[in-house]
Amino acid sequence: MTEIQIDLVELRKLDLTFPYFSKEEIMKCFDIKDTSYDKYRRMFKEKVKDKHYPSICYLKMGTKEFFNVYAWLHFFSNFEYYQDKRLEKKIVRFTKKTVEEFKEIGVA
Image (cartoon, rainbow, N blue to C red):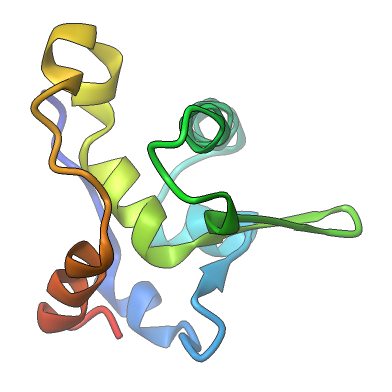
């Protein structure tokens, strides 16, 4: 599995009173390019559609898309597991407890 690269400095700069981030913020926080972002975005939207994440985790306002910070972190940290259907069953579901765990490690 590939190691997840999260820029905690960029992540902590986010104003989480609105716990969503945009394409640009995602690309900065995870140090990814447009093509990688598009791949992750498509799969995240598919997981929302499949009810792995509540529909409120994806917002579209005009032409801009926003993703719930905590759901995206959960998704991104489990991305390798989502790609293998056998491992997908082992993923801990995204719940309020998941959000609390992220807050406990300083994502708040």
